[in-house]
Length: 90
Figure (cartoon, rainbow, N blue to C red):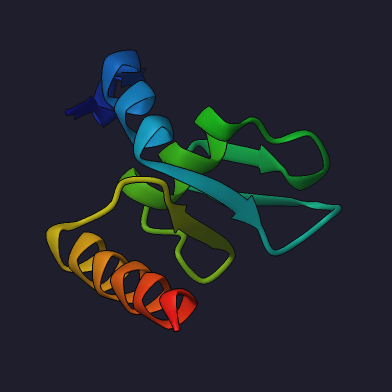
């Protein structure tokens, strides 16, 4: 995925990460470093946050909100919607 020794990032992989989730930094200012990677929290892009979260494992300082529903989530939602529709018929 990442040629980290060559400092090459696979952009297609980052686009998939950003499609699958929304990343939010827990910090609003300052900078963090991990190896050669430097991120400035005030102006970090979704691609920066995705790379830091997915590839570098900076999960303590970045939150990920999933935008893709799993099979379990869609089943739970359909049960809730069918229950609401039966309640509204009464």
